[in-house]
Length: 525
Image 1 (cartoon, helix red, strand yellow):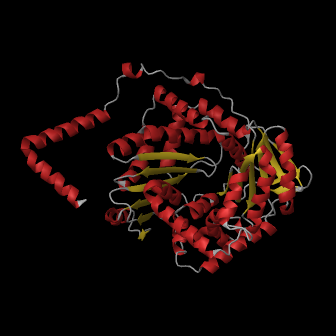
Image 2 (cartoon, one colour):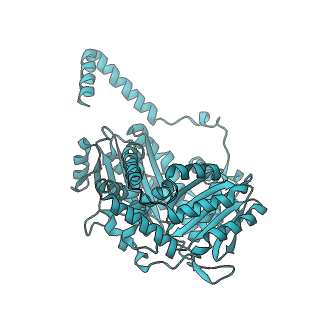
Image 3 (cartoon, helix red, strand yellow):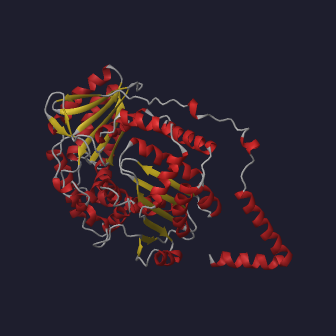
């Protein structure tokens, strides 16, 4: 950076007074051009839709709840071109809160290990011949407040399904290979060989390197997730699983005893096999669905329906110790630094949004879209030089989130977030801008989904109690929004107490920490 500054100074010195004045004049001209609005007659030439062209109807994904050998199965009959998609969801809230930080490592390891009678190379070759895909994901979300946690199964009593934390194995296979594919998936889930400590060491090193190299590309996600860590229980878990907390946990395992890691992973595997139960999400076409039920029951009937949750996992407080914060740190702003970040950083800010209400959340969704495409774009991207600036309304967790990507001045961007909300709350919103924002948010909400995305989206909606009537209510409200509702939402959010996080290079970290009240700077890598 010093060398670059020296070159610039030398270049300016060589220009002389007249040359320097010309450069400044061009810079001023560029700023005037950036701030000038396009004339209405030019904007009118661009073809566009109107609000009246948009349909309030939502797409409906067919769904029915069945059961096989005591295991609940949510079935979607959709044309899949002779491919069967199966999601095997095991509840994680049967564990203790202290176990949660291990789940991301477990979800990566279990699909990357061998079996007692086959090394990973043989297992991988067998899966390639049988399955079109097999991997594990973690899922958590707050339930819709009005949803009942227990669901009556077709052939049995109620099962606790709604608002839980899940490890989901995602499987897909050609219809004719579904049965052998489920057999190998069941063996891996039950018997994954965690005694191969050499393989564990290699995967752990790979995961650590992946996390460290992800900072320059995904720092905005880390900052945003960290800033929202105490908004809800689910947000706390997302930080533990996908945020800086997980980043630091994986780093802490670098010098850990491999035998202890092996034992922890094996214990999670065995606990899931013996005490969790599961629910299956099945997507396919016609008779292939009925044919898939038998191998599901044969291979997974032993698990039964999901068992009741551990009450110690019911609230967010039990997980706060895993956030890597000191006592009484609720809502504390934070600054992190990393050697891989030189002249850029990332800012994240979260405020509490409206409680769950499809109508209110339609307003906040539109507000987030409008901010991203106007105020934040102009102030943070065009003037501030950041590569990206985002706003998002998480309608389930009641969180309104801001973040920036590759930002040369993340401290300035934090002020810009608050300023953007205040400006949106008091500035007049013309009808054309409102209509374009509605069309843009409608396009985002109605973008085409792949078959597997449709399937998992409806499955997650089922697991949190978010039904089609909620979606229909939100869509109807989106198409009827007024400028005054947008301004009122912005004014309300501007009054909320924000949680702020900055991730940046060493040169900017101390100044950022001082500006946020003298918080401690923590080193990531």
